[in-house]
Figure 1 (cartoon, each protein chain N blue to C red):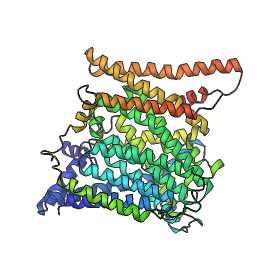
Figure 2: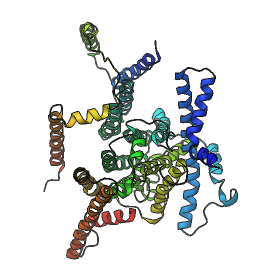
Figure 3: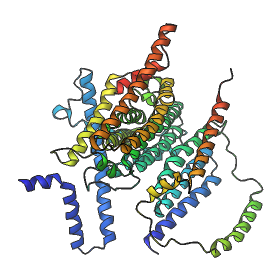
Figure 4: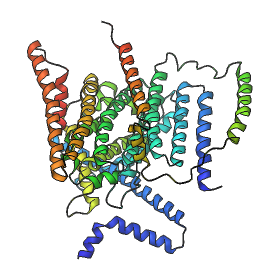
Length: 166
Length: 404
């Protein structure tokens, strides 16, 4: 096992383990902290794939902004500190069986799929190429602009809902 | 003589080359050499942060004392320069308390996260050609992203302390830090756009004219939002002593308090280092060696912070939010669009070097004067009309002028 593989396994365990604790944690606040840890693991995987830009954006947006919003939402949830209740209910066994069956179904497909392999390393100007492709009409300009329109619509909607009634 | 000057001038590249040669002569593989040099760099940078923190606590107290016509610390050692040592020993011997009902892990981890996230951006600060922790091609993005991680630490501290004031302070801190991240990121984006790279080294190399004189508006907004992100006066309402005692770190004592405090000071250090890199031309300057220029330019930013703290009163939370969302953010969006257009126009017209810089400077100053003048005029008119004392725009204009 090379060093890269060892680091990959480390980050994979971090991501999955923290994800598991996210759903099993009895305390909502702790669940969010585990979620953040899981997202850190994903950022580490991006770094390992030499996608530094994605890693930076992952940390800035998911950890710096979205998880903070989740924490706010959790903290403002009424009575979250009292009686968290068990994280599992009586359907947990059935859910586990179905999830296990789903995994059995999915695993051979994933293992058997001929994944394309990168033949060369990441070019030095990858970020420039990414930026250009986002504004190139032949590549991703339309999806990019559509995403901005969607976010703008969400912004206006949020302002409309939050506005004080006159 | 010239050789000695050359050695002092290029101290870090020479040291690095010497170390690499030494390790190679020991017959170590290339990976091991990279690892050892990386560890040494990390050690040096972390200690730069820690020593900087010790010096800054002393310098801040001295400077603020001067502003207030006091002497400041003057007992421990000559001119009180051993004060940080005395403080450190005092903090080490304090009892390590934990409030009843605190969330144990969260409470203990929070100072670590705050201090780590504050130290991490130092990696991309270049101290000279060849003297940088790591020249990432996402340099500034990395610095912003890792800095944002401190938010999680602040919230953990506020929540884990099981204290109303701590939680209120954490809420305030996060509201303020998240808000001011936006104009800060916009001003960084303007710089990145003009420089054509996100690497901190690349940005320094692109500054034949320091961007302070090319993009003064972005520089000003970065400085204001930097002060706000560091949470210093006039934006220190996240730890307003008279309202919420000390904010999110109220329950911390001893070395844990020192870690939180260290995080704040190093954050200030990092913001002024980023200001030096983005707008003051980083290590570039005549005569003096590059690392000295970096330190001098960092000190300028730090001194501005101390100066503001000694001069301005604390603003209210609504003023803080209004200034950001109604003034700085729209201004920076317009500035981003304007700079892109003017940059393209000037380059299309064939302007390069000084002419290009002058054109950009003129556009930015016009925008700055317009941005300060129009709300100022409107506010003045509203005041005259209503004869009321406070209108929404007045503190904004005052703030901006004060920070300038």
